[in-house]
Amino acid sequence: MDFNYSEKSLELQEKLRKFFDQYIFPNEQAYENAIVDSGDPLHIPDLLNELKQKAKDQNLWNLFLPDSEYGAGLTNVEYAPLAEITGQSWWAPEVFNCSAPDTGNMEILAEFGSPDQKDQWLKPLLEGEIRSCFAMTEPNVASSDATNISSSIVADGENYVINGRKWWTSNAINPRAKICIFMGVTNPENPPYTKQSQVLVPMDSEGITIVRPMHVYGYDDGYTGHPELKFENVTVPKTNIIGGEGMGFKIAQARLGPGRIHHCMRTIGMAERALELMIKRTMSRETFGTKISDHGVVQDWIARSRIKIEEARLLTLKTAWLIDNVGKEQAKIEISAIKVGVIEAASYVIDKAIQAHGAMGLSQDTPLARMAAGARTLRIADGPDEVHLRSIAKREINKHS
Figure (cartoon, helix red, strand yellow):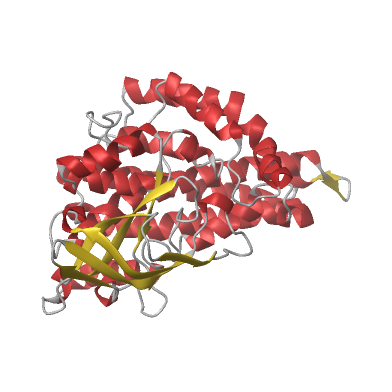
């Protein structure tokens, strides 16, 4: 396995670091202040649009898509360090059009969408003109088993009629979210993995109700939030189906594989920033006549954090290499492994960084509290730890059967 970064990746890394130093880090507080000062929790700061244009001008746009027709044409190994850099600030990935759930939705449309669907929805998503959401998780079933999805997509002449309740539908509350990819049952008589389908549902369709925003550890995440939605007799043409009836589970798996590795890449960046903040804080403060960074317990935190980050990065790069060289299906156990291991590593680093900051670490004065909420969320999002651990354990057991 070769984890050496290509010249193209190294050049993009350098450009991204400079972009962060010049535009992201200095504007983090201004971004937050613009939302608060507007009095509208769904306000989208003008700053975001300005930075998006700068990212486009510097060709730091759609880096996540390996298909050179739509994206930068990077392999997963080449993209991994770039995603890591963008993960240092929670709102930064959108600046480069590399934020969930749009990335996963664009991947679905690029791989499974019809020519008309690509023209109508993929093209404006790639341009950053609109945003999107993905409606899969349901409040009334254990959605960690996707075969439990019970919302209905019923054929009616040339249309489908959609009914169901979804929640944690990230971005659905965004004023710019124009399209939803909805997963529901079209063929209830089919075997479990071919019952569901996915359809494109314009967000201005009659019958869609935003029930409430869902909070994550008290954060509502503003215009990128995760509301509960109700779909009541929502009608869309049959041409809006993606890939054909019964393809819902297959498409979901194709979407979630890259999504999980992207989350892990960004989470490593989050952990790196948390470690940096921990070190700077402990070097700047003294207790009992000694710099906090000189205390043995703090040095233990710092050393263990570095070890955990390096372990997480190496396993993520191995997974990226496998996806590039043998495909997502052959790398699914490694994808499960990083989904658990990387989040555990980052959670440790963030927790120690918070401890090093004392009460300040719990406040809005650092990004650490939001990082902690985000890392904890990822133990559930895109499949809970237990589902991934079960898959890993089954493979290990089968080796000895």
